[in-house]
Image 1 (cartoon, helix red, strand yellow):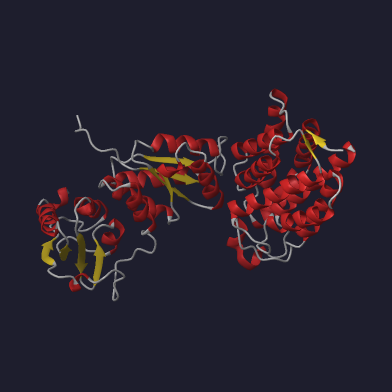
Image 2 (cartoon, chains in turn brown, orange):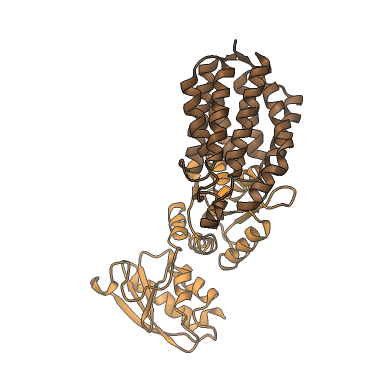
Length: 209
Length: 235
């Protein structure tokens, strides 16, 4: 069973709730090693998405992802705007105008998203960024195969451990890199939000099934 | 009424802070009054951050036909500027440069004021990094090795010497000429195309500097600088 436009819209609405619930957590993570705005930026971006979903509901999964991308680019204000914006824009391009996404299409979209983040932010694994969550997530998604829920669950599990792996790292990209050694010992907020989003998408896919 | 002139390369300063962007624009415009320097900083609600739509609007507004050089401060400012340039109707009209934002903006503005084209204005910004006057080992081919350099000693008759405004005037004076001009004060040398390098000489009023010019317009360059000095740099 595939994932239709209304499934994707439901998943994005659920993700907006998750971003609002975790706003303070992300702000606090970002306060430790950044500029303390990541949680508020993500909440603002996804809240803006909700009103756009109401006013002009997208008709394909790709259109929904593109709406998310352009909304995040316009409203987030921090690095997460261009990074997630590029990620979801590439994901939207990868799925094209498919009416329904299967597991393989979702894995392909995740891979395109990762390529977009890397192209935009130039980060590598080990730099203490969202790439540390996304790289293992894409590998796991591609290895998992199967239906959308299985692919997203594998991605979410791998992203969670990938995010945890950022704790001891010294940041080499982004605002946290200015802290040098002092950035070690903290979870990277971008890796955490990536992990939260993938978990939320996986939960939505499981419920839809 | 001003005579009709070629459009000048515009500048966009993208910062996390509206105050920072405006301050840099103010500084750059002081030395290049005819250049459109657009400051864009902060989020629409007045917070710190960068706003994609504002950057897109600034790119359009700064382009009067000669293209735009875009400078930025930190991480997301760069990424937001990149995305805005990528989404422009003609991305080739915009040059996003990795340069120290203050020095780069001043250098680019002065180059644009002198009539430089997009590529050269961008190069002026990039070249502004670490721009101390050349000391013992000049980075560029030493001009005294070039045949027939024109050399003349010039007294700085104004009070402040080669400070910001006079340095900008001097750089502007030679910018449009086909000549390499070097200004030497004591043991330091500066490329006259670079306002910051000229200021870095620290040559005060009452002192003399040596002007060394090569190239097709070397004579004209020296003549103009002499004239400028005689007028006391219009101070």
